[in-house]
Image (cartoon, rainbow, N blue to C red):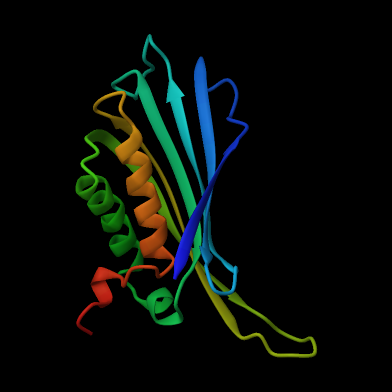
Length: 161
């Protein structure tokens, strides 16, 4: 079982006249261990900005520990980016101008009193313009993406394997 905690945090300055930011954490409910963390930032400029193609821009980031098999999958980046699009569509969050990156991280531990082995993580950074000022569905979509990435929902590209 997993839970997502959300808290308001100081927003970035100077990116837009009006800003808001949330920090999100996906926790294992039994152990309390963090599984994923991220940010969701809302930018609003009534005059719009070049490249936004609208008055609002959403910026989101997440970092999640991932299963070693998932971390070794050569299609990981494409699958995670597809999740972002799927989550937005499934939440009914109309958007355009979606851009971003997916980064895979593999950490190898050496030395010390106990062998920790390898750790795998993925980071997704994205920004997009919502089709309307109603951004609730966009936050729901990002929460869903965090849950899927951290393993709260079986990854689609591994289902049936």
